[in-house]
Length: 482
Image 1 (cartoon, rainbow, N blue to C red):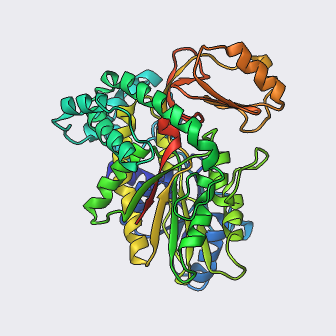
Image 2: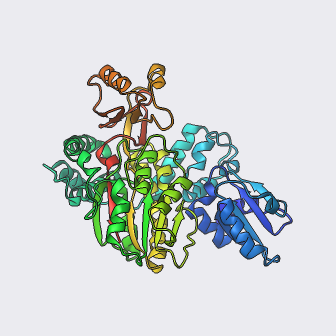
Image 3: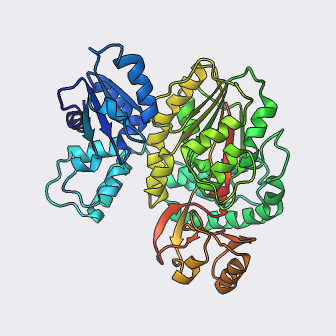
């Protein structure tokens, strides 16, 4: 047992009742790698879920068997009072085990592997945010496998890609494979201009195809995410088991990392393709488009419950279905389930916590090795699998923040990010674009605006990995069948 897991179990297992209920505001205990370790090392059952899921488990298990013990980890909501009064109630944040670290938020975003190594160092004294960043960078680099030897050739081959056929998935797969080799050797700076040039060419293709894609017949393939549900309905019989796996924030190159992890488990895709994310490439629009099966609306409230309702509404009354919100929790699939939707936000969280492709690649490798086991479970349960995402991501550099005046004209919730803006009125968006001039490359349509290149509306010079624009890595997303 690792020191950190041992300390976590000590923190959440204290009390006199056989049942312990753990609220976990930072969500760390719901991460898949943490769950697996807790289940492996805990002398009692560890169950993760919402208040409703845990209520069902309690009624079917603990109430009928008072001698049994368990640890309940709440993923959402609050436990019902009548159960709480019969349990030890614990509140846990992973940052509490790192009391001398100033940057608590960064601590809570790290993987179990990184934090275990950090914990084992027994660092004394105050650890500043910058020192923590340096420590994580060192630990992350140690998690990366030995770099490939042919990165020099990869750089040359990437630079030699000429007149790419964007309609062919082989193009983005080739770019992704070469990209991974170069980043694996921390040489991204040598291909940054090449990626910019490829993205510039892609923007011309996007202008010529995207607007037709959002209304195209999805029978042969969904050309945009809003056609995915219709494609499933048209191509799979009612008796077939189909699992739609949506990995929030996964760029096509990250799918390449996952594919390698899957091949290690002898799971290979039957068909690889790509589709467009919705633009602006943000979760509340693109994920909404996936589950609603139509053009999204800006007044939609992004939530797991709304996605579940949208997913259920796609199938006839009484049709066995199952919605699972977070891929970092254990899978519990009904035997009669024929239409499963599995969403995971773990990779998106790693993306937003990264400030370089090297860091994100290392974190993606760790995530992929763990997440690939989900496919084994799904295949053993008899599911055909469709893998996709709501949007990808791009390494962006801060250009300037929105001004207070500009913010007053924005729609409201989800109306602005670091790479997009949605205005209340078209006149305001037109004025915004007029004021920008040709300072950055952008896509402007009606009352919304998305950045095409690698700039962001953040403090000048700030480097981050984010999404919301129409960059090649944000919008050309995987649509894969297993």
